[in-house]
Amino acid sequence: MNIHGFILPTRLRHLPPMCFPPSDLEISRAQTPKAVDVLAKEIGLLADEIEIYGKSKAKVRLSLLERLKDQADGKYVLVAGITPTPLGEGKSTVTVGLVQALTAHLNINSFACLRQPSQGPTFGVKGGAAGGGYAQVIPMEEFNLHLTGDIHAITAANNLLAAAIDTRILHENTQTDKALYNRLVPSVNGVREFSSIQLARLKKLGINKTDPSALTEEEVSKFARLNIDPSTITWQRVLDTNDRFLRKMTIGQAPTEKGYSRQAQFDIAVASEIMAVLALTDSLADMKERLGRMVVASDKDGQPVTAEDLGVTGALTVLMKDAIKPNLMQTLEGTPVFVHAGPFANIAHGNSSVLADKIALKLVGQEGFVVTEAGFGADIGMEKFFNIKCRASGLVPNAVVLVATVRALKMHGGGPSVTAGVPLKREYTEENIQLVADGCCNLQKQIQIAQLFGVPVIVALNVFKTDTRAEIDLVCELAKRAGAFDAVPCYHWSIGGKGTVELARAVREAASKGSRFRFLYDVQLPIVEKIRTIAQAVYGAKDIELSPEAQSKIDRYTQQGFGNLPICMAKTHLSLSHQPDKKGVPRDFILPISDVRASIGAGFIYPLVGTMSTMPGLPTRPCFYDIDLDTETEQVKGLF
Image 1 (spheres, rainbow, N blue to C red):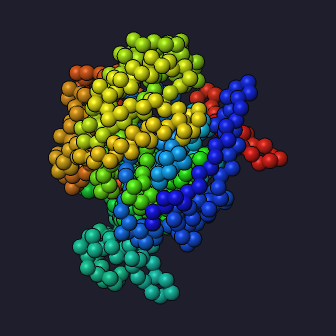
Image 2 (image 1 turned 45 degrees about the vertical axis):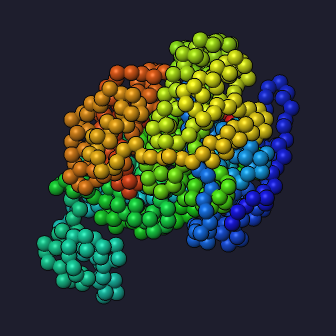
Image 3 (image 1 turned 90 degrees about the vertical axis):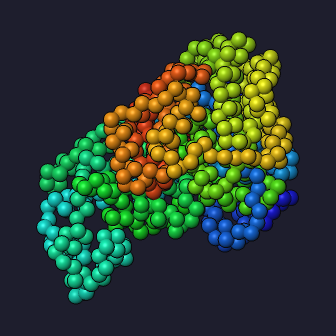
C-alpha cells in the first residue's frame, strides 16, 4: 500500500529561548504526538497489524510483510558520517531532519529507521539519543528509557544462555554418565521421552534412535556430555548499565558450586550477539535458527558448542518473540519512525534492524524513501552496513548521506583535542579557514570509501551557530570537488525539517540516478585476505599484523567451517587507524589484529583491532545527577 497523501504532518511548535536555548526534552514535551493508532492508519497499517504500548508507541507485526510482498520497495538511503569527535556529529538529527523534510515539506513518503539506545550511556555519559533540537523522535523520554522492553528481553535471553553454560559444566563435572543421562531424560509418570531439541541433538550426533532406553553406553555418554572447555567460553553475561567493576570477575565462589569457578565478565547488553541476531534476522523462523547456531565455546576436541547443543534455543526464541517486532514512533513533525535493535558499532555491525527497513520500504511505496542510520564513521558503520547488512538482507542502497561538521573537520585539521564535558577551545568557536581546509582530508577519504561501493554520496554539513559562511562554503566546495554528488548545509537542529529541504532534494535527485552498488570483497576469500582488504581499501593501512592468538583463532574458525562469513572489524571510531589520537587521514600504518572472535548466529567474524571495551564505565559526574522525576506530574526531568 502506498501511503502517499495520507500522512498529516504535525506543525512544529518553536519555543522562545529564555536565558538559554530550550533543552531537547523541553522541545519534545512541547509537541503533542499523534496517537499511535492514528499514525498507524496514516501509513497504511491494519488494526490487527499493530500492538499498542501506551499512547505513542506500538509494535508492528511481521504478518505485514506477507500482505505487502508484491508491493515494490521504495528508495533506500543510508546516513553515515566522517570520523567523529567524542561529542558526535549529528547523524541521528540529520536522519530525522531529512525525513521531516521529505514528508512534512516535500510531500514524499518517508520512514526513518533508527537504533534503540542503550540505557547505560543514557545515565552515564551521553544523555538522550533521539536526535536533538527540532529534529528528534518523540516522546524522547520513552525512546531513551525502556521503550517496549526489547533490550530487557535480550538481557534475559543472553543471561539464560550464560547460566546454561556454567550449570552444564558443573553437572557434567559432578555426575556419572548414567546419572547425567537420567536427569537429562527423566521418567515422567512412567514415560521417558526425548524433547524435540534433544531429538535434534541425537540427529546431529548421528544417533538415529527415538527411544531413550535404546541408547548404548557410548551413545549415552556422547549425548549427555558436551565436554565444554572452560578456557574457550566466549559467551558473557550482560547488563544494560555502565558498570566498570563487572569488566572482570570470578564466578562460582559459593560452596554449592563445588569448586567450579572461573574468570568471567559482563558486557553491556547491546554488545550481546543476540542483539546482532535481532538486527540481521528477517523472520521468526530465521531468528530461531540463528539463536540456535550461536557458538558459545569449544569442546575439548576443538569443536564448536552451540546454544542448540545446550538445548536452550526454543527458550531463547520465546523470550525474543516480541522483541523481533519493530517499534513504531514518530518525529516532532509527525512522520513515522521505526526504532528497532541497537548493536554496538565497534564489535557488531552498528545498524538498526533488517526487518524495520524491509517493512518501511514496503510501506513508503515505490517513490518513497527509507532513511536508515549506521553507527560511527563511514569507515565502520557504513562499511558494515554494505558488507554485512546488505549482504544478509539482499537490499540495495540508492544513496549515502555523509554527515560532517565544521567542528570535526577543524579537529582533523590539527585543532586541539575535543573532550566531552569540557568547553570547546576558541579554534572551534571562531572562524579558522585553514583548520577547516586541512581537516577536509578526512571528509574526502570518507567520500572515497563510499565510492568504493558504487553508491552516490551527498554530504550533509550539520551547521552549528558558530560556523561562518566562509567555512560552510569551503566544506561544500571541497566535498563536491572530492566527488560528492552534492554537499548541502543543514539547519534541522534549529528549525526542523524546513532546514533540511535542500538536502532532501539532493537525496531525491541522487537516488534517481541509479546505484551501481557492489560489495568490497567476496566472502569466499580466506579470512585473512578479507581483513587485509578492509584494512587497506577502507582504513588506508599499509598492511595488517596478526597476533599469534588471532592467527590461531582464524585457523580454528576456518577448520570449523566458518571461513566464508563476512568480516566485522572491531576498531576505534575516533580514527581511521587503530590509534584514537591519529586524526585526519593516517598513512603507512600497520593495523594490529590482537584477537579474532566469531558471532556465528549473527553471521560474521569479528577481528579485534587493539583493545576493545565492551562494558563502558561511569564518569566522575554521570548524567544521572540531572535526571529526576516530578512526583506530582510524573514527568521526567533532565534527560537531555
